[in-house]
Length: 146
Image 1 (cartoon, helix red, strand yellow):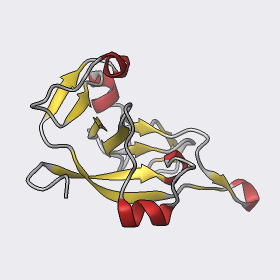
Image 2 (cartoon, rainbow, N blue to C red):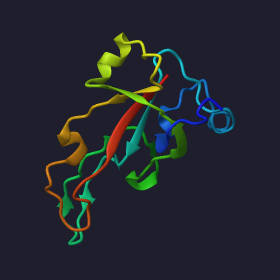
Image 3 (spheres, helix red, strand yellow):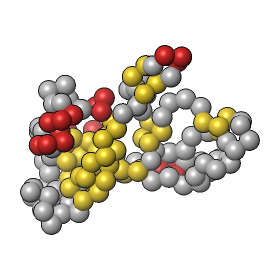
Image 4 (tube, rainbow, N blue to C red):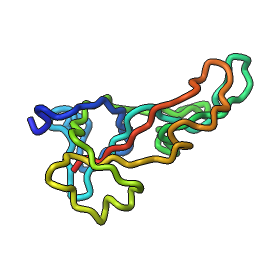
């Protein structure tokens, strides 16, 4: 109900980043518990650790997006399982900041609903050195909802 009338975006939330105080079922029924620091949501592409292969089977460099390292659950034969929840996030009108560290020192102005972190263009677009079927440009936005 808090998000009624606000801009809502879809975000993949890594299950490993959900607070141990909340279960997945609790999040699905009641939503996230948001403290003073807020909750970070990443919109767009996600980079998983490990090599990607281009259409010819050669290693290809991964582009921009959010990198997840050591957040998966190990499986037999060296495989890793990554679990995500697809969530609808009410970001509303976002206050743009240059670095995530600025959010800790700022109070969210009353006319805004969330912070948007301005990532470097290299983080967002990559260097264009993609091969095969991998995307040339990626989308990655980070919002902190309080």
